[in-house]
Image (tube, rainbow, N blue to C red; front, side, top):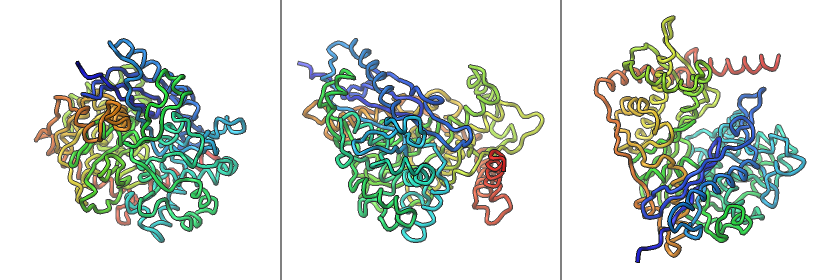
Amino acid sequence: MAARVAYGLGLDFGTNSVRALLADVRDGREVATAVADYPSGQAGVILDKKDPAVARQHPGDYAVALTKCVKAALRQAAKLRGFKPERIVGIGVDTTASTPLPIDAHCQPLALRAPFRTNPQACAWLWKDHSSYAEAQEITELAQLERPEYVARCGGTYSSEWFWSKALHCLRVAPRVFRAAASWVELCDYIPALLTGCTDVAKLRRSICAAGHKAMFHRSYGLPAADFLMRLHPELARLRGRLYEEAYTADQVAGGLSSAWARKLGLVAGTPVAVGAIDAHLGAVGAGIKPGTLVKILGTSSCDMLVTPTSTKLADIPGVCGIVAGSILPGHYGIEAGQPAVGDLFNWWVGNFDGRPDAHERLTAAAQRLQPGESGLLALDWNNGNRSVLVDVRLTGLLVGQTLHTTPAEVYRTLLEATAFGARVIMARLEEFGARVRDVVTCGGIAEKNALLMQIYADVTGRPIKISRSAQTCALGAAICGTVAGGTKRGGHGSMAAAQKAMCGLKRTVYKPRRAAARVYDELFTCYGQLHDAFGGSGRGTAVDNVMKDLIGLRTRARRGT
């Protein structure tokens, strides 16, 4: 008799929408998938016209979109012979990060309570909210002076995208919101708590992935010490006592699906829900990450993931977003780096300077006809700041070499190349400190759709570029965690390694470096490096070091009318 087919359910909470994915535990075959957009704001993001650094999400959107996409996926799955919700062995969750939100003592987001429903400060502070850059600089300077170990494993610089800087900024600009919060929780911890019906902050299981990469948590000392946080603000120190002392890997069980959510979604109460993790980290899991394989998740931004066994000695790497044991695979250090604008950068050019429905396709076709170096252009890919290796959100984009004959397609190709050069900078930094990159696997919508970009990445980095078999690697990684949380007794897997072996794969297409193009890009990369160091604040005292930051200051004063 054939074994009963079992499935993992992956829930992927992205920047603009939620995706639900059902995957066969035997081979990773994706049998049903559905997407639901967040209803609030602009494409799900609440913006502030007076401050472009603000990006929030209403936490009520998560439940609405979650319900819609899971039900739609189950309707698809119902067409499969023999499918029943009882065959879902476990549920995994990934989300953007750092996306923290203030909650009450019962794990209820403040933005769902009457006094705060229209207050954006009580909403979730989306990963790309950069309004706390001043607080991030304070945290960095204090840590470098007094507790360098706090930032040593997150590249030496704390980011405005991360937990403590956002909480501190909220305390300063919205003290009423901050003081009303019993605690703060990352989105990847909130969703499992929501699904399992957790109503006690003290019992909420926190993710080592978000805690380690975004909140300076380390198993040897936990969260930053109260006396350190006291130096930043006494109330921040008191918040520490309302957070957590332990954090868990994504193969662990956060709890069982609550009866209320089981009825709402059409699932089975008690189905194991895995501890949550960051979307890019589970994207790496879904792409089959292993030591020596760099996984690049390409979307609105990019995240670069690398793992190395915890049994090996690994140096601190300046400029990365974190080195955390267990954040991607148990028993391995997870190394994260990335670029905050990739798809967003291309969309910016198309949306503002073309805007026609087929603009990407037309510009890509025209850019394909250009040879490397032919346009005479070079760009810095910092339109949303620099995440790695400079870790400075105040840096901005740059385009050099325009003439009266420059075309939109030439600029478009130059922006593609800029993101590839930024990727090469990251790889060089990783290898400089002993984290070897043998091959590259890409995933995400851009990897699927833009062959020109993949070829440019191969030519610029000098490495073959492979593509994950799954078009939904983050959701697949979440589903894999669900199968491990469910365990072998329910028909799942006994370990992440076993689950990856069964459920991951690569496409046949491989983009290989072209020798002639690579030679030209080596020359262009030298020029890129000069711009990178000069405008990035490492130009050894040159006059251009602070130009970008000075311009931001002038823009801010002009908008305020001061």
